[in-house]
Amino acid sequence: MTAPFFLQETNDQKLFNIASELLNTEKAYVTRLKLLDQEFYAKLMEEANKGTFPVDVVKNIFSNISSITTFHRDFLLPDLEKRMGEWASTPRIGDILQKLTPFLKMYAEYVKNFDKAMELLKHWTDRSPQFKAIIQDIQSQEACGSLTLQHHMLEPVQRVPRYEMLLKDYLKKLPQDDPDRRDAEKSLEIIATAATHSNSAIRKSENLKKLMEIYEMLGEEEDIVHASNEFIKEGNLLKLAARNASAMERHLFLFNNMLLYCVPKFSLGGPKYTVRTRIGIDGMTVRESNNEDYPFTFQVSGKERTLELQASSEQDKAGWIKAIQETIDIFNQKNESFKNASVRAELGKRAPRWIRDNEVTMCMKCKEPFNAITRRRHHCRACGYVVCWKCSDNKVALEYDANKLNKVCKDCYAILKGESVTEGKKKGILEIEAGQFTDSSIMCGFLQYSERSKPWQKVWCVIPETECLVLYLYGAPQDVKAQSTIPLLGYTVEDSARPADPPATFRLSQSKSVHGFAADSEELKLRWLKVIRVAVLGERPERPQTDGANPGVSDNNNEHEAGTNGT
Image 1 (tube, rainbow, N blue to C red):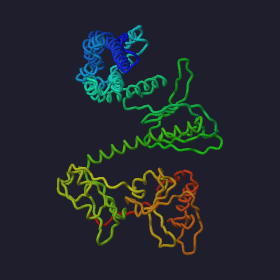
Image 2: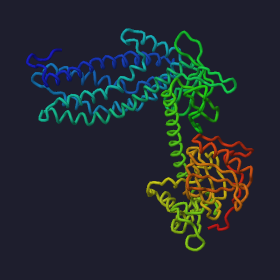
Image 3: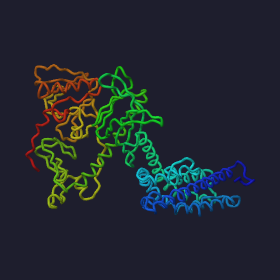
Image 4: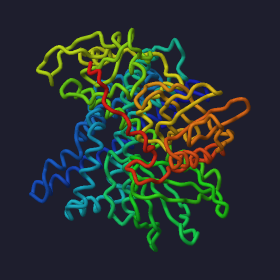
């Protein structure tokens, strides 16, 4: 189609070109819809009606493709063809695209079903030889253009964002006072909303396509093709052997929930790999490693295995560390949200574990320190936290106690009453719960502490895995706020006791700042020193190995006895 003779390379010509592109792409789109509806869908239904495989499977795969085909073939395309034929007298498309908007619900249904359709398609292609043969026969035809059924099924998902893009371009060229402007803007508003859902489905489909490719690379032996699996990164790395310091070529596939550690294998038909280890993201850590013989190395440690890997460059190493750490952070964040939701759902339905009185020195809600007269300890009967009287001045019926009224903290009261929990001000650097660190610490336990010759006091000390160069000092193991922190980098470690010092003493000094510590035994002191001497150099210390269940927890953390104030 050519533009009317009076149109030159003007704004009018540009508007005509956009409208022409809309028509031409619509014609190509209808051709592919017919291929889906009249070839793939019709022939699979014909075979399904013979009882070869379930009819419902075919219907669930293709969803409402017949309705989408009918609308575009019989209504939208003829209207666009007619309009372009009379463009000289009626140069507008906004009114025609507005006819599309009521039918976008059909696309919402198709897009919503897309993930399920892809899974069903894979399942029955693997399971039924007849199902697979029909699809392969149609895919081999010239009309398919050497593209797979999955590719063609993505067309309806991609079409709505295409309308949005053309409309935006059209409106940029359309004068503000043009009669078509109102219809075009109204159409864009509705189409843009639908395009958001389509774009999400496109990302999912591209991810699913990548999962299928990896599935084939792994010899179709690893069950990874699931909508819940998200591909993140892949690449070749060298694995450093622990015994002979040799480097072996390996290939890694990183997903949102696991890392596949693979060995390349010979193949004439593209890259193929054998999975050696599947390492879960849950509990995984990643860090740089210092290896004098091999540059660009980093370490990945999971519950299943620890790997020391060598990248091809500093940039490649940084890219892998960043990708793995971000994946770990997102996984932990989602896991924590799920746990919080589960805890809320169970609140008041079962008796909580009470935090012991002597495990805290301050209210676990307002963080004010306890004392024997004006701010005594009370227990929330819903969550078990130790709180002050101001923070427990609420009563609510608890299911586990036969729906009797019980004293609860203000947050539990809000949750159980269906109210929103009031968010406090942003937490400061000290406002991290000690209990949050204990299970993921390099070292933690009680030490005696003295700063600048002040009286010695008992403190709960923690070096977290996430902040391994910082020593946190708490009043007790369950305190919700640290008394202070000591950034260890650059401190000098003194292992010699002074005359007035208690046994098993060591000091940290930097300029005029001096911190004294005393352990319960010489053996315990040596374990703390082993960790601290690495941290002061700016390097990541390892957890000291002991016979205990948690090697990072000092022997003296088992001193707590239950409090006597059972309020």
